[in-house]
Amino acid sequence: MRVVILGAGFGGLELATMLSSADESFDVVLIDKSDAFVFGYSKLDVMFGRTTLDAVRLPYAAFARPGVRLLRETVTAIDPEARRVTTEAGVHEADVLVVALGADYDYAATPGLTEFGNEFYSVAGAQRLAGVLPQFTSGRAVVGVCGAPYKCPPAPSEAALLLHDFLLSRGVRDDCEIAIVTSFDTPIPPSPETSQALLAAFEERGIAFLPGCRIRSLGAETVALEDGTELPFDLFLGVPKHRAPDVVLESGMAEDGYIPVSSQTLETRFPGVYAVGDVATAGVPKAGVFSEAAARVVAESLLATVGNGEPPAPFDGRASCYIEFGSGRVGRVDIDFLSGPTRTGSYHAPSAALVEEKRHFGSSRRAKWFGSD
Ligand SMILES: Cc1cc2nc3c(=O)[nH]c(=O)nc-3n(C[C@H](O)[C@H](O)[C@H](O)COP(=O)(O)OP(=O)(O)OC[C@H]3O[C@@H](n4cnc5c(N)ncnc54)[C@H](O)[C@@H]3O)c2cc1C
Image 1 (cartoon, rainbow, N blue to C red):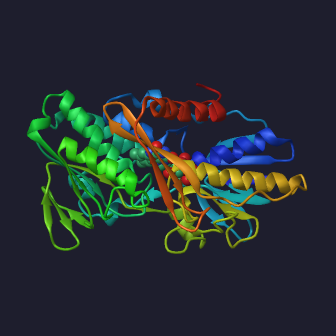
Image 2 (image 1 turned 30 degrees about the vertical axis):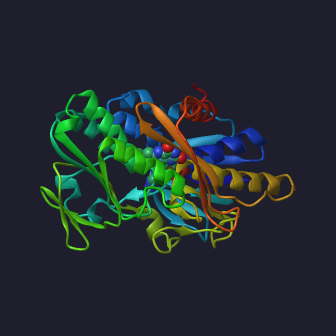
Image 3 (image 1 turned 180 degrees about the vertical axis):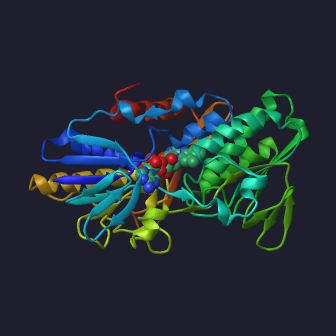
């Protein structure tokens, strides 16, 4: 079975790894335009100078899996009916096509963001901020969410808490204000307990949480909200509005911005074509752990097909996200969006065990996908 996987992020790497380990029934082509994978959370470490970009880049050259060819090519067109993909290097035909191209950023959707603000969601943006943040010694920092849905819902809260630590360690915290501006009513809407814990952490540190605010644009010194309010800032750390990559929008696969899929099987409406992760609307948040879990369901389904086995259990929309609370503390929220009648998110308070668990989360993926620790 020729499986063509578009995108070597959380979803694509997990799927290719599972099919490779299985048997020789699969001829897998994994395509990505980048030369390295970077964990989303590593961007926070890079921006606050806790590590360097070189230390967290995982070059795709280290991904060596039998039965998988990882090609560095940019996908320029997808024909889901013919299961044919065009890149700048040629054409790839698939028996099974899996779109795992993630979400892109729509910087232009927030006028002024690139001129007057910063963003910490791209690798380049996080690296740029590593140079900007040491120069911020007084004034008002705003962590602003420019649109939802966005990847990793806890990340803006983490950025504010880590900024507090950063400013404290430089002896300038008393000269600075920190505010989080978001359209959500609480930091993590599906988990009231997690939201309470984060709100308590903000209060302890004097971080203002401004809910229900829709950002329209940025000027040189103020954020303009949809309701006409203007909020002053000296430093803007933004979560840009997200959207599916252009090549996906142009393929006719997307509806309302992303690719609709069966929440249970991750199949699209095109036979033999699946979509996993941030590029799809599967009824779960946009986060690497959900992309990975969705990819596992697709892998198990393809394995069952070639092995004449039973189809896998449906995608259950369950995954755990670690949350940096600052001062080296890590908490966790266990999200369950699909297995029960309601969406739930149970909270686990920061502990030494969770610090170790998060470390293991990263090292186990590095070992599984790249053979390194
Ligand atoms: C600051 C921050 C912190 C985060 N923290 C966490 C966390 O703690 N836990 C967690 O689970 N998630 C976290 N995330 C979210 C996580 O990074 C994403 O949700 C996850 O990477 C999505 O996986 P994916 O496989 O769907 O897409 P991606 O990992 O985005 O992979 C998509 C791939 O497609 C490639 N691509 C795109 N367009 C093309 C094209 N035209 N041609 C070829 N290749 C293309 C890209 O290069 C990319 O490698 C965080 C994100 C951020 C920004």
